[in-house]
Length: 451
Image (cartoon, rainbow, N blue to C red; front, side):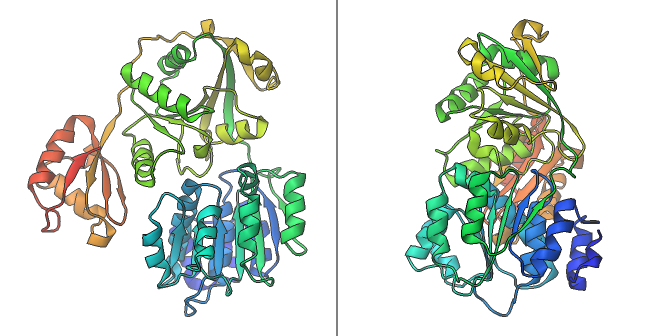
């Protein structure tokens, strides 16, 4: 189905076309007519199928921009997913001027959010805990809410958000549209749907979607860290997410890999929001090839191309395993998912045996434990961003001009409200840093440092 077959404004159709939305994915084709018709929807579609655009196009199309009240609320289980959803909604929202989308998550200054809320917003995207805190403080008001979205609804229940979700629901009008989107559903989700939705239409497109092309291998080992290094040596992946079951294990593995001259960085629930941003930017812009993560990173990471996923620990259940490995092999690319287990986990590993998965031994690997891995780029941080009217072209001009770098030596550029991140080819990082530190960007001096 083409989006032109839907009752969408011409400006929306032009924006979708410019963003590369040429035709609707199965989940978009089946849910959008229902959403635009005001129906409640219970949708099941796999990760990467276009769920965000499905509900995003729907709620943005129905928005009354002249009414500066919260008309749509999207709840997500993690800060990362909320950030990803907010970014995608802002991209689609270009079809109309003055649409305000506000993100409310933990890890950000509550006072700063209060300031943003004082000017109202059309759409709020956030995590249940922080949204509820604002509702209880009366800094957020939902009496004009038209559409409520629960994104990754199953994960929200897994993470114990049911009580908070229900508490948020108590602040919303009875007459509203409620949309539940997720990759998997069980009886609990169905029961919740009956409780919070009205005559919801069930849409399931997982059978229509092409499965990720992922090679799945399990290795028995007595030393997981050594085996992981051998895997890196043999497969030489461009980037890897390694999952651990605990924060301590994530921190330890990242530190131990760095001691072995393998560039790695950890992400887990103890990091402040600015630290998480630093970590994710470095991984996404190829300044760090290995991200060690707890399951907080299993969803919501906007990594377009991921070569490999490694489970250092056996996941807690098949569903978690599916979500972890679903980060690789996307958009038609081949992916590799490797799981390590020791003698204490062999019974758990047996539960994963099937015809698709290979079960091997550490001795089957031909890689070396003396392998070293350095990043292609290093990240330069500029203490200036969108609020300072900085654009990617300004940074590119300063680096290729005064700094004398070739465009090919400059990687991904990320610009936030107050900071900008630029990936610089490793051998040119000192030249780039020194030049920007001495010089000016758009006629201004900015603090610059290497991340």
